[in-house]
Each structure stands twice: as C-alpha cells, then as structure tokens.
Amino acid sequence: MTGGKPEDIGTDRQRRSVSPYRAGFNCVCPACAGAPLFNNLLEVKASCPACGFDLSEADPGDGAQVFVIFVIGALSALLGILLYAFFGMPLWLLALLLGLFVLVGSIWMLRIFKATLIALQFMHEAQEGRLVEKDRSDD
Image (cartoon, rainbow, N blue to C red; front, side):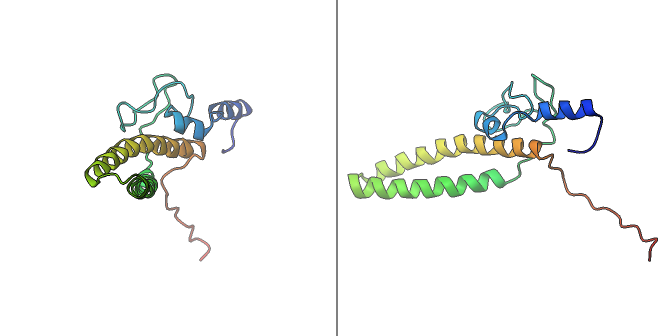
C-alpha cells in the first residue's frame, strides 16, 4: 500500500477486507466478493458487475494449471492403484472412472486455483515488472 490521503487508506483497507482464499474458493470478485469471477467455466469477466472492479488486467499465468496437474495427477494415480488393488476393478472401468475424475476434478480445481491466484494478485497489488532507468549523472 502506497501513501495517500487518510481517507484513501481507509477505503483501501475496506476494499482488501475480503480474504483472498475465501474469494478464490468461492470464485467471486476479490474486491467485494459480491459477484462471480467467471463468465463461463474458465473465462474471467472484464469487470465486476457488483463493484465495477477492473479484472481485465488479472492474469494468473500458468501457475494454476501446474498446481492442478500435480494434484490431480497424484490423486488419480493413488486412486487408480487403490481401486485396482483392493477392488480388482476391470481396467476398462478403471480408465472410465479415472477419466471422469481427471476431467471433472481438473476443471473444478482450475477454477478455484485461478480465482485464488487472481485474488492474491489483487491483495498484494502485483504488477508486471518494469525496468527503472538508473540515473547516470553520478558517473
């Protein structure tokens, strides 16, 4: 948080009163938690219809996908081994169940992880890195 007038600081604290983890899990606006974050399954809205917060700059990058790949991959491998070893499930049924698990679980987790990363960017005021020219008058 940068300096400013005292009344601006109070407004800034109020805007940041939403927990980024709660906003991420519920897939709602990180500024007000009053409206859904996504237009459809994974497309982030341009702005919040409730508070007007600009979401067009929000970019979680590939971080959410990497987490989802690791988590769903480990869970599906463990689940596959358990189902095959303890229940003797036929391989075709195992492939069908694990395929559904991976599809549904990936979409569900991707929404949550993407929303959480956007909320954390908002909370920490993350921006694209910029180069600052060094003053060379001292040389």
